[in-house]
Image (cartoon, rainbow, N blue to C red; front, side, top):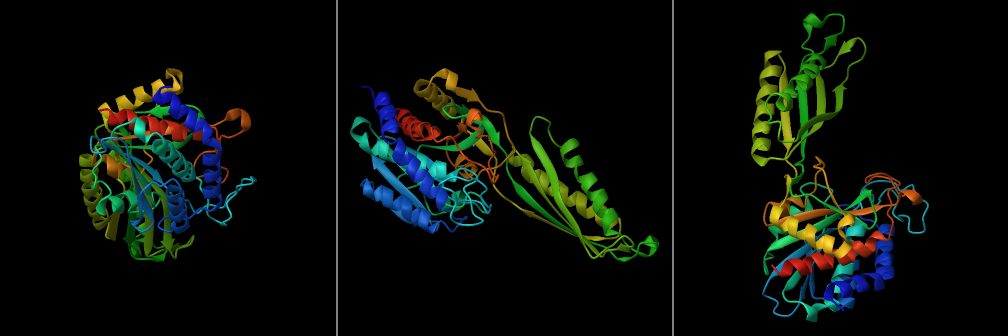
Length: 397
């Protein structure tokens, strides 16, 4: 039996256990930076398999190391995130969340269970391969500043230092049994914009006596779109969206003193991102001051853009095709959603791919971040087995 066949068989053998781990995690979700029981669960599983590990990294994170023969020959890292979202689950399933208002609606229970499954497979085959695999169970992907950034600051990429890192994410539009890859620019940066415009309120019938922040806000929202339409290189995907606007006071006949606006800016180039921040602030300040008002423009800088290393991603795609068959590996489009795996991609060669979890015939089609999100648990065979296989193939480099 080849090593690939052994991994495929172990993924089938351990499938029921991986499903059970996923269901346990789904029933007991925890919010970002609060994954205390999740971290303990991960640690307990690793301990039961005699896999050495550390706990309490960046608060609740867990890091394990599986050594094969000649452990210092090469080192590859695998990453999974552990946190859930503040969503009340609407699914009627035996493993429904037992923590009201908290749900694994982004599949991090799948990611964690898959990496635990891969850990068991790698541990049981460790005499068949050379090198070491570092396993990163990360907190707080869903909340700034992102658990990845904190784990990096605490040295997760050192002692020992991996040469590359691989992560996966559930993808409901893709059928279970399939995976998707994209080399190069893949996911966007994510910055939050908080703007306060201050004017002078008064009677709506006498605007000449006021400095109207509503009017200024309308001009500002329209004007800032020029950052994308007239200043951006059209080859760089970029989006500026405002999702919230409200005033302090105000009515049909009352001009308020103040308007607050919130939005998001996303792009796929770090140089342009920094330049756009300055352009937005400069444009906003001059516009509002020119209209007689005052402005506070705060940018909460979030995750960087996610760059899939091209040589690594090509190797991972080829390895996935060898494991699953070419027909089960697809190309992915760029997307301006964000992921804190991007912090790893800024530090070392990284590959972030998508794990198909949908099943149209069974009605498993709900998107992530929805209250009816679920998966076809057959995907866990691929989730665990493929991660193990990709790591071992990369150890050969």
